[in-house]
Image 1: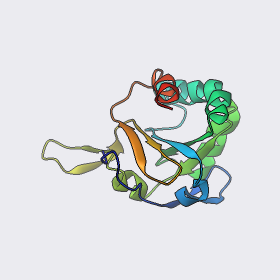
Image 2 (image 1 turned 30 degrees about the vertical axis):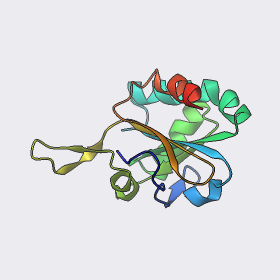
Image 3 (image 1 turned 90 degrees about the vertical axis):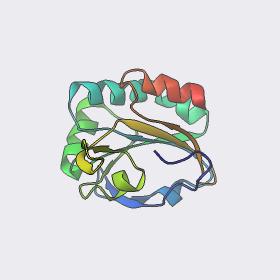
Image 4 (image 1 turned 90 degrees about the horizontal axis):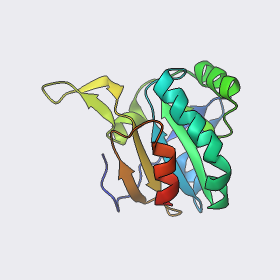
Length: 149
């Protein structure tokens, strides 16, 4: 995990519609940046639907939610449509952003693998990491982030 108080690495990834989105697009807003393993799995669906259900409260507090996984744009689109997700999902198939935010799983020798640790960052209006939560519980994480705001 990256340290609290550090500048969040900027990035540009395609969203579920294929539109390039950069972290810097959200300057002036708080950003909930959450990393999850895979679209349509039980834990990831539970987490995404909890973010969906609380989304109006995140918006009331001036925050946006961005979900990141290595799944394709097409997979993200299906995930969004199937569950009525009102927030942006970002595709990181090359694991560049996942690596930059240090949320990759590690093997027994400490080397990064293709998996990721379910993790969430709260980034402030100036692009600085305000809070960092690693190995979060899928269902509880959205409430945890709302409380962190």
